[in-house]
Image (cartoon, rainbow, N blue to C red; front, side, top):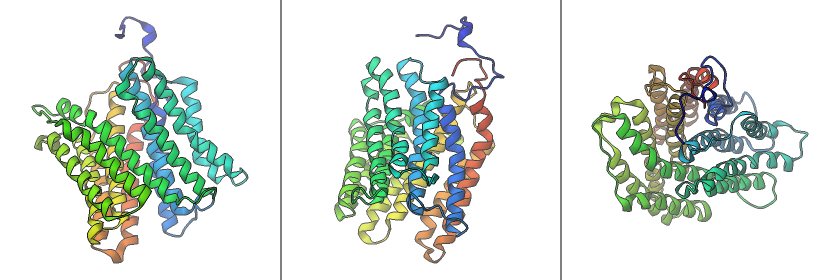
Length: 398
């Protein structure tokens, strides 16, 4: 239904605060600050200054919180905002959104509350993604938006991956904790591949004058299928030559896809190139995975190409774009945020590429990359906190 611009109830004061007006606001805000805090704690852990062991192992906590904490917050913020555009139905806000935010925060703090029984720590954390799936499913099913229903089972499978992590931590079943985290990485990549196929060419054509993207139907179908096949092989059967060849297939298919979107003109529009660079990092991650066939790469390199380069760049770029658009601002990026994109890309290079050739400085390079990540997301947190807390500048609701 079209917005009635004469209806005063559709407007709020642009000077008022609206941190729970729409899903992107609290979850992007928490994602920005958690991206900084989590890596500061990890940096201190690597330096031997603190220990974050307890319910999780230190490495297990780092992987879990970056995936099921930071990344899950961005996913929730994006989907709970985008669903309103898809369906035309007003999405969760106000006290209900506040309660969902409390559930998310409880999952972050519960592992440090040593008096809590471990089953309760697990339960508090696991329920967040199914709740997001339920909230998303209601308007999508009501409006029969079947093309968007795919995100509901994807969120539930992410919750299952989180369950695997907790079952390992609880020692209920003999499941490697890495298995759940690795599954989550691939599930996020699947989400990026599916959602990226919709938004990246659209944003490219809208944002870059004179550019027309190209799509091939076979490539569109194979892009997600190739990632899923690689994921199934890697997660359930472990590393093998089959996984390597499937990774080559995924890299090739998605490289062709990215080629259809690319234009030299994107470099004049940071809100576009950041998304395409992020997609390129995912492709590079599959290339590194395939190079393990020849003992030239390691899981850690492909894993961090996916996470720091692909997921990091994509989530930062999408948070920047969605926040500008849904607060009523002109789709123009400030110079500080452009700098943050560049810094994060350098962080990925330092974390992934340089260690391949400078093994003796591996720990120091991780620390440098961590510092660069912290700077990039600190810029986001400082620049976007006022925007995320205050109501839209055009007076509209949301």
